[in-house]
Image (cartoon, rainbow over all chains, first blue to last red; front, side):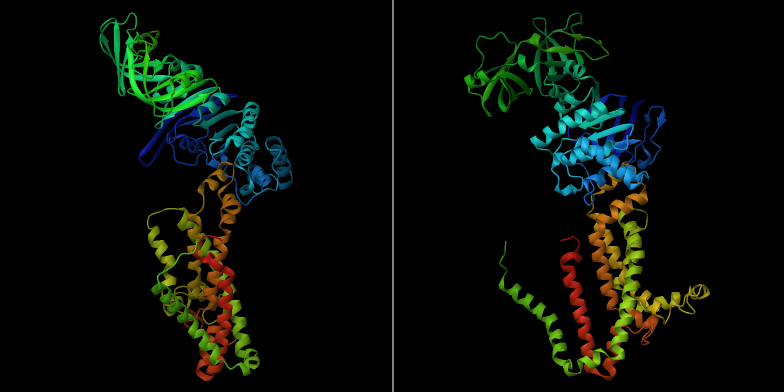
Length: 364
Length: 260
Protein backbone atom coordinates (compact mmCIF):
# COMPACT_ATOMS: atom_id res chain seq x y z
CA UNK A 1 0.00 0.00 0.00
CA UNK A 2 1.28 3.43 -0.86
CA UNK A 3 0.08 6.99 -0.99
CA UNK A 4 -0.08 8.98 -4.20
CA UNK A 5 -1.77 12.30 -3.79
CA UNK A 6 -2.26 15.37 -5.86
CA UNK A 7 -3.60 18.36 -4.02
CA UNK A 8 -5.03 21.27 -5.95
CA UNK A 9 -6.61 23.78 -3.63
CA UNK A 10 -7.18 27.51 -3.75
CA UNK A 11 -7.03 29.44 -0.49
CA UNK A 12 -8.01 32.93 -1.47
CA UNK A 13 -5.29 34.24 -3.72
CA UNK A 14 -2.90 31.46 -2.69
CA UNK A 15 -2.98 28.27 -4.70
CA UNK A 16 -1.52 24.93 -3.76
CA UNK A 17 -0.62 22.43 -6.48
CA UNK A 18 1.34 19.65 -4.87
CA UNK A 19 1.92 16.02 -5.69
CA UNK A 20 3.41 13.76 -3.06
CA UNK A 21 4.06 10.05 -2.88
CA UNK A 22 5.02 7.76 -0.03
CA UNK A 23 5.47 4.02 0.28
CA UNK A 24 4.09 1.78 2.97
CA UNK A 25 6.38 1.67 5.97
CA UNK A 26 8.03 4.89 4.91
CA UNK A 27 7.96 8.31 6.53
CA UNK A 28 7.74 11.21 4.14
CA UNK A 29 8.58 14.62 5.56
CA UNK A 30 6.66 17.46 3.97
CA UNK A 31 9.10 20.25 4.71
CA UNK A 32 8.59 23.90 3.99
CA UNK A 33 8.73 27.40 5.42
CA UNK A 34 5.73 28.94 7.16
CA UNK A 35 3.00 29.84 4.70
CA UNK A 36 4.17 27.31 2.10
CA UNK A 37 0.83 25.51 2.15
CA UNK A 38 1.77 22.54 4.33
CA UNK A 39 -1.38 22.69 6.43
CA UNK A 40 -3.46 23.10 3.29
CA UNK A 41 -2.05 19.79 2.03
CA UNK A 42 -2.94 18.11 5.34
CA UNK A 43 -6.46 19.55 5.28
CA UNK A 44 -6.92 18.42 1.68
CA UNK A 45 -5.69 14.89 2.43
CA UNK A 46 -8.09 14.73 5.36
CA UNK A 47 -10.95 16.04 3.20
CA UNK A 48 -11.48 19.12 5.33
CA UNK A 49 -11.13 21.60 2.49
CA UNK A 50 -12.15 21.48 -1.14
CA UNK A 51 -9.42 20.11 -3.34
CA UNK A 52 -9.38 18.64 -6.78
CA UNK A 53 -6.86 15.99 -7.63
CA UNK A 54 -6.66 12.29 -6.96
CA UNK A 55 -5.67 10.83 -3.61
CA UNK A 56 -4.86 7.15 -3.88
CA UNK A 57 -4.15 5.03 -0.85
CA UNK A 58 -3.14 1.57 -2.03
CA UNK A 59 -5.50 0.90 -4.89
CA UNK A 60 -8.34 2.91 -3.40
CA UNK A 61 -9.31 6.44 -4.39
CA UNK A 62 -10.17 8.27 -1.16
CA UNK A 63 -10.63 11.80 -2.51
CA UNK A 64 -14.36 11.25 -2.99
CA UNK A 65 -14.92 10.16 0.61
CA UNK A 66 -16.17 12.50 3.34
CA UNK A 67 -13.56 13.17 6.05
CA UNK A 68 -15.05 10.74 8.56
CA UNK A 69 -14.78 7.82 6.11
CA UNK A 70 -11.15 8.37 5.10
CA UNK A 71 -8.87 5.74 6.65
CA UNK A 72 -6.44 8.17 8.23
CA UNK A 73 -5.42 9.59 11.56
CA UNK A 74 -4.33 13.18 11.99
CA UNK A 75 -2.38 14.65 14.89
CA UNK A 76 -3.11 18.31 14.41
CA UNK A 77 -0.85 21.21 15.16
CA UNK A 78 -0.95 22.04 18.89
CA UNK A 79 -2.92 18.84 19.50
CA UNK A 80 -6.44 20.17 18.90
CA UNK A 81 -7.66 18.07 21.82
CA UNK A 82 -11.29 18.40 22.84
CA UNK A 83 -11.05 20.65 25.92
CA UNK A 84 -14.07 19.28 27.77
CA UNK A 85 -13.14 15.61 27.38
CA UNK A 86 -10.59 13.78 29.50
CA UNK A 87 -7.32 12.64 27.92
CA UNK A 88 -8.71 9.11 27.84
CA UNK A 89 -12.00 10.19 26.23
CA UNK A 90 -9.99 12.11 23.63
CA UNK A 91 -7.98 9.01 22.71
CA UNK A 92 -11.14 6.89 22.70
CA UNK A 93 -12.92 9.35 20.39
CA UNK A 94 -12.02 7.70 17.04
CA UNK A 95 -13.20 4.33 18.39
CA UNK A 96 -16.43 5.69 19.88
CA UNK A 97 -17.12 7.59 16.65
CA UNK A 98 -16.88 4.26 14.83
CA UNK A 99 -19.60 2.81 17.02
CA UNK A 100 -17.38 0.85 19.40
CA UNK A 101 -18.94 0.58 22.86
CA UNK A 102 -17.59 2.61 25.71
CA UNK A 103 -15.99 -0.27 27.64
CA UNK A 104 -13.83 -1.79 24.89
CA UNK A 105 -13.09 1.66 23.44
CA UNK A 106 -11.77 2.93 26.75
CA UNK A 107 -9.74 -0.24 27.32
CA UNK A 108 -8.07 0.14 23.94
CA UNK A 109 -7.54 3.89 24.40
CA UNK A 110 -6.13 3.32 27.85
CA UNK A 111 -3.51 0.91 26.49
CA UNK A 112 -2.47 3.31 23.73
CA UNK A 113 -2.34 6.23 26.15
CA UNK A 114 -0.21 4.24 28.59
CA UNK A 115 2.23 3.38 25.81
CA UNK A 116 2.63 6.91 24.40
CA UNK A 117 2.05 9.06 27.46
CA UNK A 118 2.43 6.97 30.62
CA UNK A 119 2.83 10.10 32.74
CA UNK A 120 -0.52 11.57 31.71
CA UNK A 121 -3.44 10.85 34.05
CA UNK A 122 -6.28 9.41 31.92
CA UNK A 123 -8.85 11.66 33.58
CA UNK A 124 -6.80 14.85 33.10
CA UNK A 125 -8.50 17.58 31.06
CA UNK A 126 -6.48 18.92 28.11
CA UNK A 127 -6.17 22.50 29.41
CA UNK A 128 -4.22 21.11 32.39
CA UNK A 129 -1.67 19.29 30.19
CA UNK A 130 1.71 20.65 29.14
CA UNK A 131 2.36 21.15 25.44
CA UNK A 132 4.43 17.99 25.18
CA UNK A 133 1.82 15.93 27.03
CA UNK A 134 -1.02 17.28 24.88
CA UNK A 135 0.89 16.47 21.71
CA UNK A 136 1.55 12.90 22.80
CA UNK A 137 -2.15 12.44 23.63
CA UNK A 138 -2.92 13.81 20.15
CA UNK A 139 -0.58 11.27 18.55
CA UNK A 140 -2.21 8.48 20.57
CA UNK A 141 -5.62 9.68 19.35
CA UNK A 142 -4.39 9.66 15.76
CA UNK A 143 -3.27 6.01 15.80
CA UNK A 144 -5.68 4.32 18.21
CA UNK A 145 -8.08 3.28 15.42
CA UNK A 146 -5.25 1.80 13.34
CA UNK A 147 -5.61 4.01 10.28
CA UNK A 148 -3.74 3.28 7.06
CA UNK A 149 -2.32 6.79 6.76
CA UNK A 150 -0.86 8.77 9.65
CA UNK A 151 -0.56 12.54 9.29
CA UNK A 152 1.48 14.45 11.85
CA UNK A 153 1.07 18.20 11.41
CA UNK A 154 3.92 20.17 13.01
CA UNK A 155 4.09 17.92 16.08
CA UNK A 156 6.83 19.93 17.81
CA UNK A 157 5.80 23.45 16.93
CA UNK A 158 5.14 25.61 19.94
CA UNK A 159 6.88 23.19 22.30
CA UNK A 160 9.71 24.21 24.58
CA UNK A 161 12.97 22.27 24.75
CA UNK A 162 11.64 19.91 27.39
CA UNK A 163 8.43 19.23 25.47
CA UNK A 164 10.44 18.44 22.36
CA UNK A 165 12.73 16.13 24.27
CA UNK A 166 9.69 14.26 25.66
CA UNK A 167 8.01 14.04 22.30
CA UNK A 168 10.95 13.04 20.10
CA UNK A 169 11.32 9.40 21.28
CA UNK A 170 7.54 8.93 21.13
CA UNK A 171 7.54 10.13 17.54
CA UNK A 172 10.48 7.88 16.64
CA UNK A 173 8.77 4.82 18.16
CA UNK A 174 5.34 5.64 16.78
CA UNK A 175 6.60 6.23 13.27
CA UNK A 176 8.78 3.11 13.35
CA UNK A 177 5.98 0.83 14.57
CA UNK A 178 3.15 2.32 12.51
CA UNK A 179 2.43 -0.14 9.72
CA UNK A 180 0.91 2.20 7.14
CA UNK A 181 2.03 5.30 5.32
CA UNK A 182 3.42 8.14 7.44
CA UNK A 183 3.50 11.79 6.48
CA UNK A 184 5.25 14.24 8.79
CA UNK A 185 4.59 17.91 8.15
CA UNK A 186 7.21 20.23 9.59
CA UNK A 187 9.20 23.38 9.08
CA UNK A 188 12.04 22.01 11.19
CA UNK A 189 14.76 20.39 9.05
CA UNK A 190 16.29 18.63 12.05
CA UNK A 191 12.96 17.02 12.86
CA UNK A 192 12.54 16.00 9.23
CA UNK A 193 16.03 14.57 8.96
CA UNK A 194 15.82 12.64 12.19
CA UNK A 195 12.32 11.23 11.67
CA UNK A 196 11.78 10.82 7.95
CA UNK A 197 13.16 8.61 5.22
CA UNK A 198 12.42 10.97 2.39
CA UNK A 199 11.54 14.60 2.04
CA UNK A 200 9.26 16.63 -0.18
CA UNK A 201 10.06 20.32 -0.04
CA UNK A 202 7.05 22.59 -0.35
CA UNK A 203 7.49 26.25 -1.22
CA UNK A 204 4.82 28.69 -2.35
CA UNK A 205 2.29 25.89 -2.70
CA UNK A 206 4.48 23.78 -5.00
CA UNK A 207 6.73 20.81 -4.33
CA UNK A 208 10.11 22.13 -5.43
CA UNK A 209 12.08 19.00 -4.67
CA UNK A 210 11.45 15.43 -3.60
CA UNK A 211 13.96 12.78 -2.67
CA UNK A 212 16.27 11.59 0.06
CA UNK A 213 18.15 14.06 2.21
CA UNK A 214 21.33 13.08 0.38
CA UNK A 215 19.68 14.03 -2.90
CA UNK A 216 18.78 17.42 -1.48
CA UNK A 217 22.20 17.92 0.06
CA UNK A 218 23.92 17.11 -3.22
CA UNK A 219 21.72 19.26 -5.44
CA UNK A 220 19.45 21.60 -3.56
CA UNK A 221 17.05 23.17 -6.03
CA UNK A 222 16.12 26.32 -4.09
CA UNK A 223 17.62 28.73 -1.61
CA UNK A 224 15.35 27.28 1.04
CA UNK A 225 16.47 23.73 0.33
CA UNK A 226 20.11 24.84 0.34
CA UNK A 227 19.71 26.58 3.69
CA UNK A 228 18.00 23.53 5.08
CA UNK A 229 20.96 21.36 4.34
CA UNK A 230 23.39 24.14 5.12
CA UNK A 231 24.65 24.91 1.65
CA UNK A 232 24.99 28.30 -0.03
CA UNK A 233 23.00 28.34 -3.22
CA UNK A 234 23.26 30.70 -6.18
CA UNK A 235 20.95 30.45 -9.18
CA UNK A 236 21.28 32.59 -12.27
CA UNK A 237 22.98 33.17 -15.61
CA UNK A 238 26.51 31.89 -16.15
CA UNK A 239 28.72 34.01 -18.42
CA UNK A 240 32.32 33.28 -19.50
CA UNK A 241 35.05 35.62 -18.17
CA UNK A 242 38.86 35.73 -18.37
CA UNK A 243 41.11 32.94 -17.18
CA UNK A 244 38.87 30.01 -18.03
CA UNK A 245 36.40 31.10 -15.40
CA UNK A 246 32.76 32.11 -15.38
CA UNK A 247 30.62 34.66 -13.61
CA UNK A 248 27.39 33.34 -12.11
CA UNK A 249 25.03 36.31 -12.03
CA UNK A 250 22.53 35.47 -9.33
CA UNK A 251 19.74 37.84 -8.35
CA UNK A 252 21.40 38.70 -5.06
CA UNK A 253 25.02 39.12 -6.22
CA UNK A 254 27.69 37.70 -8.50
CA UNK A 255 29.96 34.72 -7.92
CA UNK A 256 33.10 33.82 -9.87
CA UNK A 257 33.19 30.13 -10.64
CA UNK A 258 35.30 27.70 -12.59
CA UNK A 259 33.95 27.07 -16.07
CA UNK A 260 32.51 23.55 -16.23
CA UNK A 261 34.54 21.13 -18.35
CA UNK A 262 33.24 20.23 -21.78
CA UNK A 263 30.67 23.01 -21.90
CA UNK A 264 30.88 25.54 -24.76
CA UNK A 265 31.97 28.98 -23.50
CA UNK A 266 28.78 30.90 -24.03
CA UNK A 267 26.15 32.21 -21.57
CA UNK A 268 23.88 29.64 -19.94
CA UNK A 269 20.70 30.47 -18.01
CA UNK A 270 19.29 28.63 -15.00
CA UNK A 271 22.61 27.51 -13.59
CA UNK A 272 22.87 26.47 -9.95
CA UNK A 273 26.03 27.01 -7.93
CA UNK A 274 26.46 25.58 -4.44
CA UNK A 275 29.15 26.47 -1.92
CA UNK A 276 29.74 24.61 1.31
CA UNK A 277 29.79 26.92 4.33
CA UNK A 278 33.09 25.37 5.44
CA UNK A 279 34.72 26.59 2.19
CA UNK A 280 33.92 30.22 3.00
CA UNK A 281 36.85 31.99 4.67
CA UNK A 282 36.05 34.88 6.99
CA UNK A 283 38.40 37.85 7.48
CA UNK A 284 38.10 41.03 9.51
CA UNK A 285 39.80 43.18 6.85
CA UNK A 286 40.20 43.04 3.05
CA UNK A 287 42.18 39.84 2.40
CA UNK A 288 45.60 40.97 1.13
CA UNK A 289 47.51 37.88 0.06
CA UNK A 290 44.55 35.74 -0.89
CA UNK A 291 44.30 33.99 -4.22
CA UNK A 292 40.55 33.72 -3.82
CA UNK A 293 38.66 35.10 -6.82
CA UNK A 294 35.58 35.80 -4.72
CA UNK A 295 35.71 38.43 -2.01
CA UNK A 296 32.50 39.82 -0.54
CA UNK A 297 32.07 42.47 2.09
CA UNK A 298 29.24 42.23 4.61
CA UNK A 299 28.16 42.18 8.23
CA UNK A 300 27.54 39.25 10.52
CA UNK A 301 23.80 38.84 10.94
CA UNK A 302 23.74 35.84 13.21
CA UNK A 303 26.14 33.43 14.90
CA UNK A 304 24.81 29.94 15.66
CA UNK A 305 27.05 27.78 17.81
CA UNK A 306 27.11 24.02 17.29
CA UNK A 307 29.78 22.80 19.70
CA UNK A 308 33.19 23.72 18.31
CA UNK A 309 31.72 24.88 15.02
CA UNK A 310 29.96 28.15 14.49
CA UNK A 311 27.67 29.01 11.63
CA UNK A 312 27.79 32.67 10.64
CA UNK A 313 25.07 34.19 8.54
CA UNK A 314 26.60 37.09 6.64
CA UNK A 315 24.60 39.88 5.06
CA UNK A 316 26.50 40.41 1.83
CA UNK A 317 25.75 40.32 -1.87
CA UNK A 318 24.98 37.46 -2.25
CA UNK A 319 24.04 36.54 1.34
CA UNK A 320 26.26 33.79 2.71
CA UNK A 321 26.49 31.16 5.39
CA UNK A 322 30.04 30.48 6.60
CA UNK A 323 31.17 27.82 8.99
CA UNK A 324 34.12 28.69 11.20
CA UNK A 325 35.62 27.27 14.37
CA UNK A 326 34.79 28.64 17.78
CA UNK A 327 38.50 29.43 18.11
CA UNK A 328 38.56 31.69 15.10
CA UNK A 329 35.38 33.44 16.25
CA UNK A 330 37.26 34.36 19.45
CA UNK A 331 40.45 35.20 17.60
CA UNK A 332 38.70 37.41 15.05
CA UNK A 333 36.42 38.88 17.69
CA UNK A 334 33.32 38.07 15.61
CA UNK A 335 29.97 39.18 16.95
CA UNK A 336 26.67 40.05 15.53
CA UNK A 337 27.07 43.26 13.48
CA UNK A 338 30.82 42.78 12.87
CA UNK A 339 32.05 43.98 9.50
CA UNK A 340 33.72 41.11 7.67
CA UNK A 341 35.13 40.07 4.33
CA UNK A 342 34.27 36.59 3.11
CA UNK A 343 36.18 34.83 0.40
CA UNK A 344 36.25 31.58 -1.50
CA UNK A 345 38.05 30.13 -4.48
CA UNK A 346 36.21 29.94 -7.78
CA UNK A 347 36.68 26.17 -7.98
CA UNK A 348 34.98 25.69 -4.63
CA UNK A 349 31.63 26.66 -6.12
CA UNK A 350 29.99 23.54 -7.46
CA UNK A 351 28.04 24.08 -10.66
CA UNK A 352 24.87 22.29 -11.76
CA UNK A 353 23.65 23.02 -15.27
CA UNK A 354 19.92 23.04 -16.04
CA UNK A 355 18.46 19.76 -17.23
CA UNK A 356 18.25 20.98 -20.82
CA UNK A 357 22.05 21.45 -20.91
CA UNK A 358 23.07 18.30 -19.14
CA UNK A 359 21.84 16.29 -16.25
CA UNK A 360 25.24 16.06 -14.67
CA UNK A 361 26.83 17.88 -11.80
CA UNK A 362 30.22 19.27 -12.69
CA UNK A 363 32.83 19.41 -10.01
CA UNK A 364 34.27 22.93 -10.13
CA UNK B 1 -5.92 48.18 37.20
CA UNK B 2 -8.47 50.76 38.14
CA UNK B 3 -8.78 53.68 35.79
CA UNK B 4 -9.93 57.12 36.78
CA UNK B 5 -12.78 58.57 34.76
CA UNK B 6 -13.70 62.22 34.18
CA UNK B 7 -16.06 63.42 36.89
CA UNK B 8 -18.76 64.22 34.31
CA UNK B 9 -18.88 60.61 33.18
CA UNK B 10 -19.18 59.41 36.76
CA UNK B 11 -22.02 61.88 37.36
CA UNK B 12 -23.96 60.75 34.29
CA UNK B 13 -23.38 57.11 35.23
CA UNK B 14 -24.85 57.80 38.66
CA UNK B 15 -27.83 59.40 36.93
CA UNK B 16 -28.22 56.24 34.80
CA UNK B 17 -28.18 54.00 37.85
CA UNK B 18 -30.68 56.28 39.61
CA UNK B 19 -32.93 56.12 36.54
CA UNK B 20 -33.35 52.40 37.21
CA UNK B 21 -33.27 52.54 40.99
CA UNK B 22 -35.93 55.22 41.46
CA UNK B 23 -38.87 53.25 39.99
CA UNK B 24 -37.85 50.28 42.12
CA UNK B 25 -37.74 52.54 45.15
CA UNK B 26 -41.17 53.83 44.16
CA UNK B 27 -42.55 50.31 44.07
CA UNK B 28 -41.04 49.56 47.47
CA UNK B 29 -42.54 52.80 48.84
CA UNK B 30 -46.05 52.25 47.53
CA UNK B 31 -46.40 48.53 48.12
CA UNK B 32 -49.09 47.75 50.74
CA UNK B 33 -46.78 45.69 52.95
CA UNK B 34 -49.47 45.13 55.61
CA UNK B 35 -51.61 43.24 53.06
CA UNK B 36 -48.70 41.42 51.51
CA UNK B 37 -49.46 37.95 52.92
CA UNK B 38 -53.07 38.16 51.86
CA UNK B 39 -52.31 39.56 48.37
CA UNK B 40 -49.52 37.15 47.59
CA UNK B 41 -51.72 34.17 48.45
CA UNK B 42 -54.68 35.53 46.47
CA UNK B 43 -56.03 33.73 43.44
CA UNK B 44 -54.72 36.32 40.98
CA UNK B 45 -51.15 36.06 42.32
CA UNK B 46 -50.95 32.29 42.76
CA UNK B 47 -52.62 31.51 39.44
CA UNK B 48 -50.56 34.21 37.70
CA UNK B 49 -47.36 32.78 39.05
CA UNK B 50 -48.34 29.24 38.06
CA UNK B 51 -49.31 30.25 34.51
CA UNK B 52 -46.19 32.41 34.18
CA UNK B 53 -43.94 29.54 35.20
CA UNK B 54 -45.66 27.13 32.84
CA UNK B 55 -45.68 29.57 29.92
CA UNK B 56 -42.09 30.78 30.37
CA UNK B 57 -40.62 27.30 30.77
CA UNK B 58 -42.60 26.06 27.75
CA UNK B 59 -41.35 29.07 25.80
CA UNK B 60 -37.74 28.37 26.84
CA UNK B 61 -38.06 24.76 25.67
CA UNK B 62 -39.50 25.86 22.32
CA UNK B 63 -36.76 28.49 22.00
CA UNK B 64 -34.08 25.79 22.33
CA UNK B 65 -35.90 23.52 19.91
CA UNK B 66 -35.97 26.05 17.07
CA UNK B 67 -33.33 28.57 18.17
CA UNK B 68 -30.38 26.17 18.32
CA UNK B 69 -30.85 24.74 14.81
CA UNK B 70 -31.42 28.23 13.40
CA UNK B 71 -28.29 29.51 15.16
CA UNK B 72 -26.28 26.59 13.78
CA UNK B 73 -27.61 27.25 10.29
CA UNK B 74 -26.70 30.93 10.45
CA UNK B 75 -23.33 30.37 12.12
CA UNK B 76 -22.07 27.37 10.20
CA UNK B 77 -23.40 27.57 6.69
CA UNK B 78 -23.52 30.12 3.98
CA UNK B 79 -26.11 30.33 1.26
CA UNK B 80 -27.66 33.03 -0.88
CA UNK B 81 -30.12 35.04 1.18
CA UNK B 82 -28.53 34.20 4.55
CA UNK B 83 -28.65 37.89 5.50
CA UNK B 84 -32.38 37.90 4.91
CA UNK B 85 -32.86 34.74 6.99
CA UNK B 86 -30.83 36.31 9.81
CA UNK B 87 -32.93 39.48 9.67
CA UNK B 88 -36.17 37.46 9.75
CA UNK B 89 -34.92 35.34 12.65
CA UNK B 90 -34.18 38.45 14.70
CA UNK B 91 -37.36 40.29 13.68
CA UNK B 92 -39.29 39.31 16.86
CA UNK B 93 -36.67 41.16 18.92
CA UNK B 94 -37.50 44.53 17.38
CA UNK B 95 -41.14 44.01 16.44
CA UNK B 96 -43.71 45.60 18.80
CA UNK B 97 -45.06 42.57 20.70
CA UNK B 98 -48.65 43.48 19.90
CA UNK B 99 -47.78 43.24 16.20
CA UNK B 100 -46.27 39.82 16.88
CA UNK B 101 -49.55 38.82 18.53
CA UNK B 102 -51.60 39.95 15.54
CA UNK B 103 -49.22 38.10 13.24
CA UNK B 104 -49.62 34.93 15.26
CA UNK B 105 -53.42 35.29 15.09
CA UNK B 106 -53.31 35.63 11.32
CA UNK B 107 -51.14 32.52 11.13
CA UNK B 108 -52.57 30.20 13.80
CA UNK B 109 -55.91 31.86 14.63
CA UNK B 110 -59.25 30.20 13.83
CA UNK B 111 -59.38 31.87 10.43
CA UNK B 112 -55.58 32.09 10.09
CA UNK B 113 -53.31 30.45 7.53
CA UNK B 114 -52.74 27.30 9.58
CA UNK B 115 -55.83 27.57 11.81
CA UNK B 116 -57.74 24.86 9.95
CA UNK B 117 -54.95 22.26 9.78
CA UNK B 118 -53.93 22.95 13.39
CA UNK B 119 -57.49 22.35 14.63
CA UNK B 120 -57.73 19.24 12.50
CA UNK B 121 -54.87 17.64 14.47
CA UNK B 122 -56.40 18.82 17.73
CA UNK B 123 -54.04 21.72 18.31
CA UNK B 124 -55.90 24.71 19.66
CA UNK B 125 -53.53 27.62 20.12
CA UNK B 126 -55.40 30.93 20.36
CA UNK B 127 -56.58 31.71 23.91
CA UNK B 128 -54.98 28.61 25.47
CA UNK B 129 -51.95 28.13 27.76
CA UNK B 130 -50.11 26.49 24.87
CA UNK B 131 -50.87 29.55 22.76
CA UNK B 132 -49.50 31.85 25.48
CA UNK B 133 -46.30 29.79 25.49
CA UNK B 134 -46.07 30.03 21.68
CA UNK B 135 -46.50 33.81 21.87
CA UNK B 136 -43.77 34.04 24.51
CA UNK B 137 -41.49 31.72 22.54
CA UNK B 138 -41.98 33.81 19.42
CA UNK B 139 -40.54 36.93 21.04
CA UNK B 140 -37.81 35.17 23.02
CA UNK B 141 -36.22 32.52 20.77
CA UNK B 142 -34.00 35.08 18.91
CA UNK B 143 -31.94 35.29 22.12
CA UNK B 144 -31.01 31.62 21.68
CA UNK B 145 -30.28 32.15 17.97
CA UNK B 146 -27.99 35.08 18.78
CA UNK B 147 -26.20 33.23 21.57
CA UNK B 148 -25.55 30.13 19.45
CA UNK B 149 -24.37 32.13 16.48
CA UNK B 150 -22.03 34.28 18.61
CA UNK B 151 -20.76 31.15 20.36
CA UNK B 152 -20.01 29.44 17.05
CA UNK B 153 -18.07 32.45 15.88
CA UNK B 154 -15.73 32.24 18.86
CA UNK B 155 -15.36 28.47 18.52
CA UNK B 156 -12.14 26.93 17.21
CA UNK B 157 -13.27 25.17 14.02
CA UNK B 158 -10.12 23.05 14.09
CA UNK B 159 -11.69 21.02 16.87
CA UNK B 160 -14.65 20.11 14.69
CA UNK B 161 -12.25 19.40 11.82
CA UNK B 162 -10.26 17.12 14.08
CA UNK B 163 -13.43 15.36 15.19
CA UNK B 164 -14.60 14.61 11.67
CA UNK B 165 -11.14 13.55 10.48
CA UNK B 166 -11.08 11.11 13.41
CA UNK B 167 -14.25 9.47 12.16
CA UNK B 168 -17.07 11.51 13.67
CA UNK B 169 -20.15 11.81 11.48
CA UNK B 170 -21.83 15.22 11.29
CA UNK B 171 -24.38 14.31 13.95
CA UNK B 172 -21.75 12.76 16.22
CA UNK B 173 -19.47 15.80 15.96
CA UNK B 174 -22.40 18.13 16.70
CA UNK B 175 -23.45 16.07 19.73
CA UNK B 176 -20.06 15.30 21.21
CA UNK B 177 -17.93 18.31 20.26
CA UNK B 178 -19.84 21.36 19.02
CA UNK B 179 -22.77 21.51 21.45
CA UNK B 180 -20.72 20.72 24.59
CA UNK B 181 -18.36 23.55 23.70
CA UNK B 182 -21.34 25.86 23.18
CA UNK B 183 -22.82 24.96 26.57
CA UNK B 184 -22.01 28.28 28.33
CA UNK B 185 -23.51 30.35 25.53
CA UNK B 186 -26.44 27.97 25.27
CA UNK B 187 -27.21 28.34 28.98
CA UNK B 188 -26.92 32.12 28.80
CA UNK B 189 -29.13 32.35 25.71
CA UNK B 190 -31.77 30.09 27.20
CA UNK B 191 -31.89 31.96 30.51
CA UNK B 192 -32.27 35.26 28.67
CA UNK B 193 -35.00 33.79 26.48
CA UNK B 194 -36.74 32.48 29.58
CA UNK B 195 -36.48 35.89 31.27
CA UNK B 196 -37.88 37.60 28.18
CA UNK B 197 -40.75 35.09 28.12
CA UNK B 198 -41.44 35.75 31.80
CA UNK B 199 -41.98 39.45 31.08
CA UNK B 200 -43.96 38.96 27.87
CA UNK B 201 -47.15 41.04 27.68
CA UNK B 202 -48.24 42.37 24.28
CA UNK B 203 -48.01 39.25 22.13
CA UNK B 204 -49.57 37.12 24.84
CA UNK B 205 -52.60 39.31 25.48
CA UNK B 206 -53.19 39.73 21.74
CA UNK B 207 -52.83 36.10 20.75
CA UNK B 208 -53.86 34.25 23.90
CA UNK B 209 -56.08 36.71 25.71
CA UNK B 210 -56.23 37.31 29.46
CA UNK B 211 -57.95 34.36 31.16
CA UNK B 212 -57.08 33.71 34.77
CA UNK B 213 -55.61 30.24 35.27
CA UNK B 214 -55.25 29.77 31.52
CA UNK B 215 -53.34 32.58 29.85
CA UNK B 216 -53.09 35.24 32.55
CA UNK B 217 -49.37 35.44 33.29
CA UNK B 218 -47.92 37.68 36.01
CA UNK B 219 -47.53 40.75 33.76
CA UNK B 220 -51.15 40.40 32.64
CA UNK B 221 -52.20 39.95 36.25
CA UNK B 222 -50.34 43.13 37.19
CA UNK B 223 -52.09 44.99 34.40
CA UNK B 224 -55.48 43.73 35.50
CA UNK B 225 -54.80 44.53 39.16
CA UNK B 226 -53.80 48.06 38.19
CA UNK B 227 -57.39 48.78 37.04
CA UNK B 228 -58.96 47.79 40.37
CA UNK B 229 -56.29 47.60 43.10
CA UNK B 230 -53.09 49.62 42.44
CA UNK B 231 -51.58 48.41 45.72
CA UNK B 232 -51.82 44.78 44.64
CA UNK B 233 -50.31 45.77 41.30
CA UNK B 234 -47.21 47.23 42.96
CA UNK B 235 -46.76 44.16 45.13
CA UNK B 236 -47.08 41.79 42.17
CA UNK B 237 -44.65 44.01 40.27
CA UNK B 238 -42.12 43.62 43.04
CA UNK B 239 -42.35 39.85 42.68
CA UNK B 240 -41.31 40.27 39.04
CA UNK B 241 -38.51 42.68 39.98
CA UNK B 242 -37.06 40.18 42.43
CA UNK B 243 -37.32 37.33 39.87
CA UNK B 244 -35.63 39.38 37.13
CA UNK B 245 -32.86 40.53 39.44
CA UNK B 246 -32.23 36.95 40.53
CA UNK B 247 -31.85 35.88 36.87
CA UNK B 248 -29.37 38.65 36.11
CA UNK B 249 -27.30 37.95 39.20
CA UNK B 250 -27.22 34.25 38.32
CA UNK B 251 -26.05 35.10 34.81
CA UNK B 252 -23.55 37.80 35.81
CA UNK B 253 -21.68 38.97 32.71
CA UNK B 254 -22.39 35.90 30.67
CA UNK B 255 -25.13 37.29 28.47
CA UNK B 256 -22.73 39.45 26.52
CA UNK B 257 -20.96 36.45 25.08
CA UNK B 258 -17.82 35.00 26.59
CA UNK B 259 -18.18 32.65 29.54
CA UNK B 260 -16.64 34.02 32.72
